[in-house]
Length: 108
Image 1 (cartoon, rainbow, N blue to C red):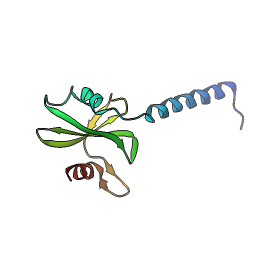
Image 2: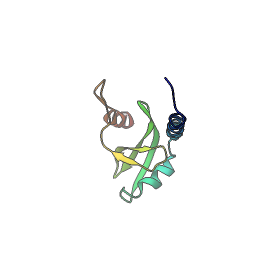
Image 3: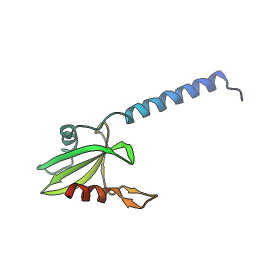
Image 4: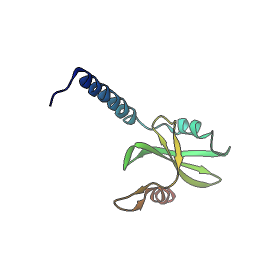
């Protein structure tokens, strides 16, 4: 297989992009204080971020236990705290609801 100069440049550009994406995913999760700052835009006034950690099954994603009105919830955020979502994360192979398992673990 022969690569042209343009093809080699394209491959190099792709490798640079992949490298940048992997390095962005390999950082650590935000601190609880940083997560709280990020969440303030969407959460009620009185809430507390109890814990932030990498999701075992998807280490590029952070799960955060947030307590509002004495009720814990799990929200997910990227490692930079720029993207936040809520809902159930389900591991397809085992059909485990990882969000519910995390809440059960937290409530012990």
